[in-house]
Image (cartoon, rainbow, N blue to C red; front, side):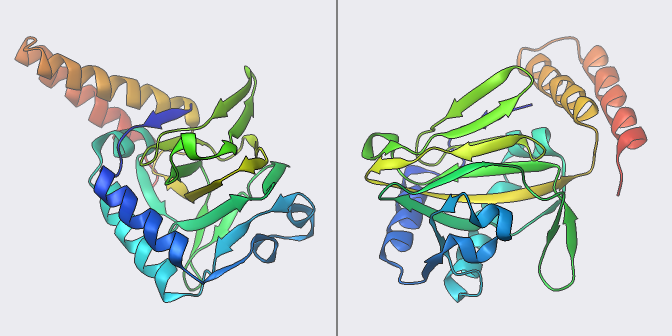
Length: 226
């Protein structure tokens, strides 16, 4: 399931992140962060993982994400890898690839990558190209979202970033280990959760809504791995 999560950051927050990242001198060659196979197709800059700035911005973004109900309902996060930040310009691109199944987190912590996320900081009118292209059984989907918006998609998907031919594309990217490993089960829970929310908002029968809420939590209790 691919999901567009709008307005994760306010306009002011987005501008603050963008300005801080643009003015930073902590960018390094993105090929230094991948293995030999990825280095063949990766041409971008990445904020130095070891820098204090990266750790500070990642912590700020994680605080925002934990308070976003749509993001939480769709991903059901057990663990979130602290976000990384990348920059594409002057033809920068990342060819078709698949993310590693297990990611190394802080210290010796490891994370199974169930879901991948990209959060955009650049206004889409300010650069050409740079679309995130996600390939699945229904074809290829191009994603280029407004600044402050996020796309959530299965980390198992083949995907790429098209070359940026004008301006620059700055974004955050990170991975999630969900409480519910199975994608179909996770999607069913998300659809049930959004339906319950809608029923509550429209004043539907409270007894039926409570009963459906119980079904949701009993399914989550059965499927969650914690």
